[in-house]
Amino acid sequence: MTIERHSGAVRTGEAGMTMPLCLLLSGCAGWQSALDPQGPHAQHIASIIWLFIGVCTAVWLAVMVGLAIALVRRRAELMVFLRSALTPAPVPSSPLE
Image (tube, rainbow, N blue to C red; front, side, top):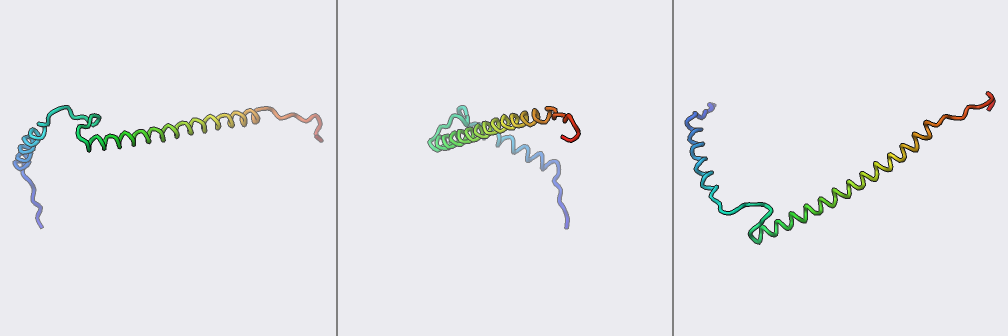
């Protein structure tokens, strides 16, 4: 079994063909923007994407609000625990108490 290697001339030839193809494909007219769809199908896809972004934003905000509530509650519970743990215990006046 033999392995054939490409010479530098072949690679140069491939690069030489790639550049004109890129120049031909860059001849599109007008400003291309994903936020400005032009055709009816593109507008339909854009409306679906905006709906998806809205739902994802609502879910993210709900999770962040839930996280904030949980952190505030946990901190309040921790503060109550620390206050009870840090208050000194009453010292008995006699050893039998």
